[in-house]
Length: 419
Image (tube, rainbow, N blue to C red; front, side, top):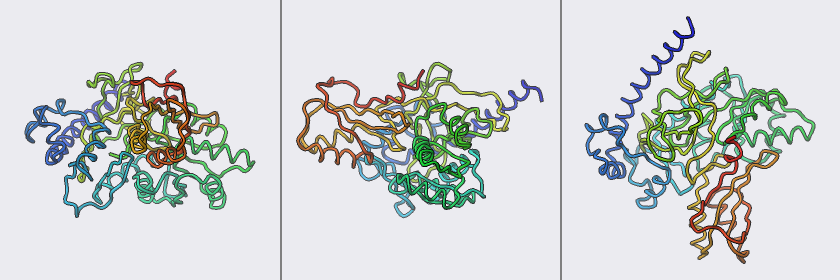
């Protein structure tokens, strides 16, 4: 088949997929309309009944993570977004905010299936023994990834986060050949192993959850013989896109509606190189808490629509290049400045602050809290409170002054990678 014919075939296949996605999204929105939170939010946009959804899709307001968090504050525990009877809930995960996220058994099965598709595309298979290194408690990531690995047939070692030496011992002792990890943690493991002069049997890696350096995977392949592929996902909908063996970008998932908007204007926009756009997702199937037009805050720079040699017709993007809002991710956890504000308020502290996310020379992410004014006497209590709220270790810096209306979060990793 000629190149032009292949391009036309891929475009036609994806066009048919998009039509099915639109139909599924409209059905999901009708379910969402049965919840008070969505019904109230959409009323002002003229979306008041199921019949008006399909023809007025673009009028449906976008949903932000901050909206989910605020709705839980106003109407705990689910922010008036629960769309099934309480008895149908199988799992409730807890994200910073706090944000309580209910799932039916079917919801979690579908989330896991999306991750299984991603991990298979990243090269994992039933014969692999996998160190699963994301957090198992409270948040959804590890539970869903564990379930996905079992669906594939992998042998799973539930390592979880941290404990570098224990991971290295287990990888060597058990002959673990594959790993699911945040890229910075994987690079840290490899660096320590190199310093010890004891190579690891790892040959495959599926990485996700952080802003990755474009050269990281090439370094792992060159220096450690590890074939690393990347996938992208969110706690709300599961895997969104994943790499194939061709290594030319992450293919969009076909049973999820993905839209793109200009992060500055909030208007729908085409992904064009040089003009970053924000990813917006709608889950077609989730029952317990419908997710309709969620702004992920994650930015991409262009979308490749030409055919891929792997045969997957879905468009693909190279990587996440940054975040659009005052929320970012560090070690897979959302960093929400509002949580620091809550800790300060509880301690009756009225100081300007700014969170800084940096990447060290050894590729570790560092979260620093800059506080305006002289050092505080109860600094250890404040530090412990902020760390408990964010579920991350922090460094605290005191600076002379910070602007009253300045940013409360600066992700210096993004600044350093936009060139």
